[in-house]
Length: 73
Image 1 (cartoon, helix red, strand yellow):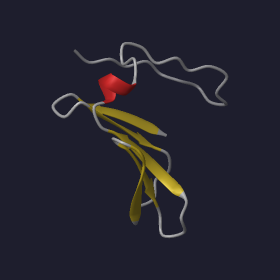
Image 2 (tube, helix red, strand yellow; image 1 turned 90 degrees about the vertical axis):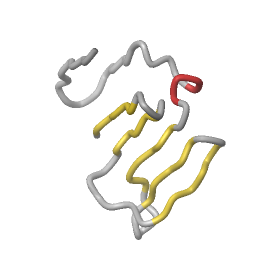
Image 3 (tube, one colour; image 1 turned 180 degrees about the vertical axis):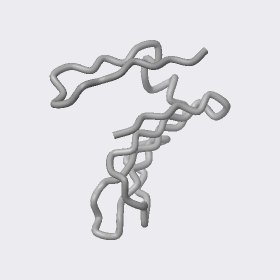
Image 4 (cartoon, rainbow, N blue to C red; image 1 turned 90 degrees about the horizontal axis):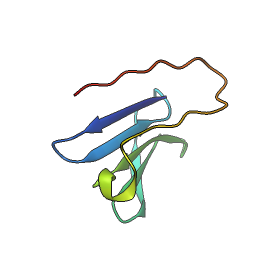
């Protein structure tokens, strides 16, 4: 899984799977689900992310893998 924020457009993309998207579905205004050719979710695009989410922190709890912390100013 990869999470990437684009400040110039205030959008957040959460890559759920390393597969190409074939279609999109808007599940809520400004929130778009990318799906592959089999209808499986591969990513989530959130426009105006700062209005939908608290971008000041990311809590990761009880995940079955190690995490690393990175930040850029």
